[in-house]
Image 1 (cartoon, rainbow, N blue to C red):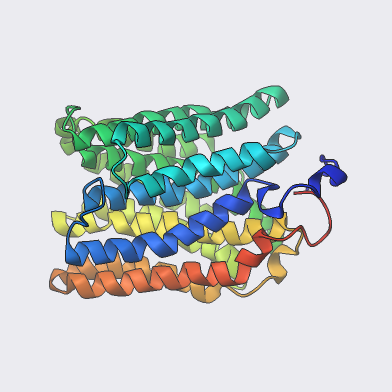
Image 2 (cartoon, one colour):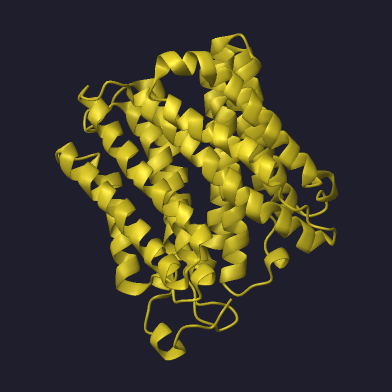
Length: 394
């Protein structure tokens, strides 16, 4: 970690607002623990009278734009400091971003008009893109500018999601949600391809496999196409399944090249490999299974296993490293990583095979999800609220 901040000024800032990962990892994990039990209650009891949006809409939107986007914000606001070699967002500016993320989570449960809630959420994404973009521009680190069009797409998709509640656009909420899941699949594919083989080789002492340009294009370009086709259901019905299979094969080749079998001795490494493996497996199952109910449930193999699992593994690692601790000498989390993987399997394969046990499997999956993130909060939450253990800024 580069010492690029005046320590005396740093000590005047509350530790929770000294770098982006601190408030956003804490709030994201807390929201993961709150939002899923709330959804299970709504799923089994019906629409709450004081919720301003449909319950299913709220569930999907909040797991994408609430929980997942909070973690993305914490990650990029922290990583850009290293990419650009300039101080990251902190103190009042960071506090503003946190407030803009938090407000929509609260406003959904009030009579505030949706145009205001959606505008606040769009402002959060726009300011997040600015905080990352101007630092990348100053450092001329052009390879990291890919985040900016991704955030622009997220702003458009978010507005579209709100509009679907009123039946305004010529597509459904489901189309927007599918598009954003492909958005996150692409993000995980790009960032996972950068960091997972690097972390693995560095920790375990084997040669890092060099990325193959043709393989990256084969793995990622179909995801871009699937994002676009989400809004064109007729074309998607013809091209979607073969694109999923093609992307799934390419993603599987990527994982094999990472030598996952060599990582089993270190939970912070094998957790990244196994949770990322949910991407190619879910793509292949969705593309190959004839039974649509079963295939549809494979979305949860990605949403819980890949997205939730990679998030849990990465925030554990980043919390250790950016609070000045030895990354591989922290509290054990392997039970949490197992819990999130089993949660994904229960919610996807379990429900797909035995749909009559839907409520039971949903309850089990939700309980395992909550256990995993509670373990993170208990073991790592205090680290986020205290100054770095090594005395450095950040």
